[in-house]
Amino acid sequence: MVKVKVYITLKSGVLDPQGKAIEGALHTMGVDNVGDIRVGKYMEFHIEPKADHSIDEQVTFMCNKLLSNPVIEDYRYDMEEVITT
Amino acid sequence: MVKVKVYITLKSGVLDPQGKAIEGALHTMGVDNVGDIRVGKYMEFHIEPKADHSIDEQVTFMCNKLLSNPVIEDYRYDMEEVITT
Image 1 (tube, each protein chain N blue to C red):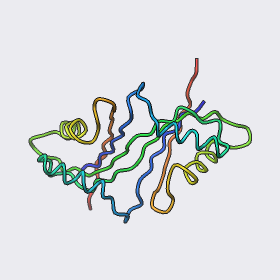
Image 2 (cartoon, rainbow over the protein chains, first blue to last red; image 1 turned 30 degrees about the vertical axis):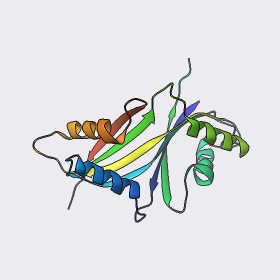
Image 3 (tube, rainbow over the protein chains, first blue to last red; image 1 turned 135 degrees about the vertical axis):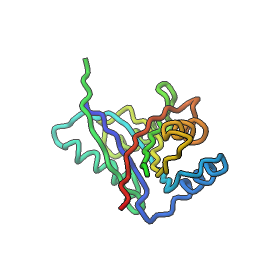
Image 4 (cartoon, chains in turn cyan, red; image 1 turned 90 degrees about the vertical axis):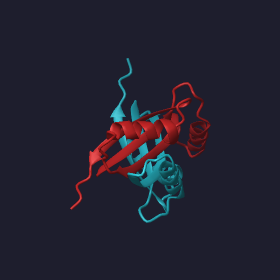
């Protein structure tokens, strides 16, 4: 079994209203040395390797078709083997 | 300047309806070897070190007071020095 961690972020140049709102709230709270806040999605899941597709192929398919919006979002992912005892 | 990456995830035991919805959609798309999907938030920002607070203190304050909901969410973060030329 493999644990996959996916990081989905807005492409640079895409306005991030959530990031701007957080920046404003932080300034109100007196935190004024923070900037360039970008908010994205973080997903974790387990995947059982299959013979007919590599995990890279499957994760790429999942990211492009469902988990991210390729028009405005980028994605990257990490994988780690899960030792089941 | 320091770049901070924050990962916010639901505490284990907290129901993740978004994760369940994604799992259902994946099964409909024929991806049936994926499970335990957990959806969270991923944030990046730059922070200018200040004399009166360490960056750890500031990020911890930000996470506890604004970026995450300590009742149902956990957070962790990474930091990397940004070399400005």
